[in-house]
Amino acid sequence: MSQLIHGKPLTEWLHMYPLLEKMMSTEEVFWLNPNYTRWTNMAKELPFDEGDVREAEQRWKRFAPFIATVFPETKHSEGIIESPLIEIENMKKELASMFQLPIQGKLLLKCDSHLPIAGSIKARGGIYEVLKHAEELALEHGLLSLEDDYSILASDKFRAFFSQYSITVGSTGNLGLSIGMISAKLGFRVNVHMSADAKQWKKELLRSNGVNVIEHHSDYSYAVEMGRKEAEKDPNNYFIDDENSPHLFMGYAVAAFRLKKQLEEKKIVVDKDHPLFVYLPCGVGGAPGGITFGLKLLFQDDVHCFFAEPTHSPCMLLGMMTQLHDKVSVHDFGIDNKTEADGLAVGRPSKFVGKTMEKLVSGIYTMNDDRLFMLLKRMKDVEGIALEPSALAGVYGPVQLLAEGKTYMEQHELPVKNATHICWATGGSLVPKEEMEAYYQKAVNF
Ligand SMILES: *Cc1c(COP(=O)(O)O)cnc(C)c1O
Image (cartoon, rainbow, N blue to C red):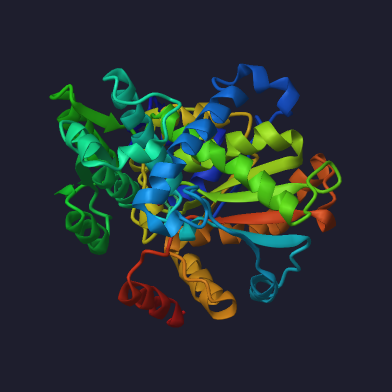
């Protein structure tokens, strides 16, 4: 068999990238980015700057009175959608004993699993892009000015106006959920194209909110493609392109500014002598990419971001390592993209995120589903926090870095005993009780 993969025989690919062999047999890997570059030597090459993130932050602020009005659960935060950052001392001990490895430094969990409204990290990107679109439409039609109190958007007049427009998206579940929830409140008609991995309860929740859910018996990339095709037919149908949206990216990036404040409140110092490590579950790349970009703006060389993918869906690693980015799918290398981590079940990475991350991300690791479930159970047992499987991918990060990343630490002369590790918990609070129980029981069997 001498079938070519992207113009080369497999043997040549394996020779160029020895890690591919393990990836193809869905074994866990830890990859250090050979193109990682100091911030000052590369920041100018990036397609975005701090102004873009500040603009997104301002937009969130303008919408806060509206959000507080239509989602009473955000009243106490005055319409700001944010999640807690908490120290997980018990889990730190648990990881140390599970993996026979002392976890040096502080261990924290960023609980996007408990973001209001959508219960996942998608509340940052998805909700943001819908708000941006709504604002543009209302401004364009002279119904709104930037100085207005945006709570006026929560009126029948605006709902009637937005009901002339549709929003369409393709999703493995959570993006559809976040977009469906906010769009329904504004009055938009919403179409969510769901991949086969999407969980039944996510579809039902959306339908009960009046969202048009279209199911596909194929994977995420196909669902996105179908959404794109549908939206193209109607100029009043706005497509949110998870594979290629700078707006989603900016919505995610704002998280970094908020995190910086939370770290300051906790008196956690980030500097050359106190490095920050952040572990981000990665699907198509927008969420971890946007957050990494924001963090790099603020902490530059003192923050080190690692992405986490399932062994069966290592699309970002494959795209970045081969530099084929969105040209390559895990299927091209015989990897099946089947994982219980539905939020990460993506076979082809974003068009622009991998390129933007080329010199920014420190590395990527993969992990198998069994381990996700094991960590899911331990997190519930010792911290009382229930997360969906995808969200546990970040929790494996400190273990992987401390076990496999010694060269990285030495190369960058990082004092690991002063480190702060943040595992980004990306979803879980909306998972129905019975589903969560089933996840938990799965782990009991290991
Ligand atoms: C979508 C999602 C991610 C990853 O975000 P991408 O933008 O797809 O990389 C991680 N965790 C959960 C729970 C998600 O829903």
